[in-house]
Image 1: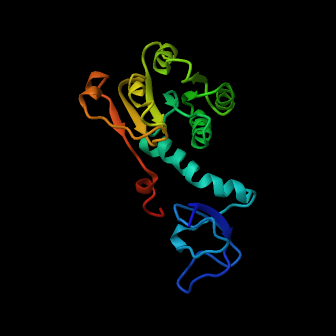
Image 2: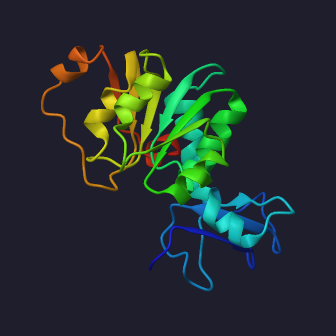
Image 3: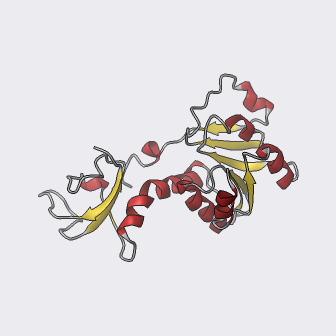
Length: 214
């Protein structure tokens, strides 16, 4: 039963369900079985879809959009004037998060691994971009921030970027490690956080940020 995000039309409603009717278009995420043609769905997991948004966009956006939301508004309530470093800025979550961060008024520094991805990130909210395959991104971040460092690092890459990302943070900045694309992160020596500026680290997941419908 593959697939976790989907969109579809309600064809039947249980006797105790309120707020939904046959014919409504709804979406969901975090419910395995999205590749099926028809399915049963717990009503509290269904979200009404506004008109004017294509099914393909809705089905693709839920987890990525909600991830970008909790990162920017819950994990660290991003404020205008703050500076962030966002790894994999041309990825699915990155393209949403960087545009959103820019709209909030933050300065956005993004990393990617190719010229094409850098151009994509630059066109979607990043003020500056860094090719982490060709540059020392921590050194470049320090240059871009006049030695201060960024307020927050958002890192879905994991093992390959984690420790160097700590060098990008200002004192008491926050490292948000929300993915393991290159492998899981291990921090056996918590003293490294003290030595690099009394830093904070969190490893969030959407399952806890969206545990309840509200």
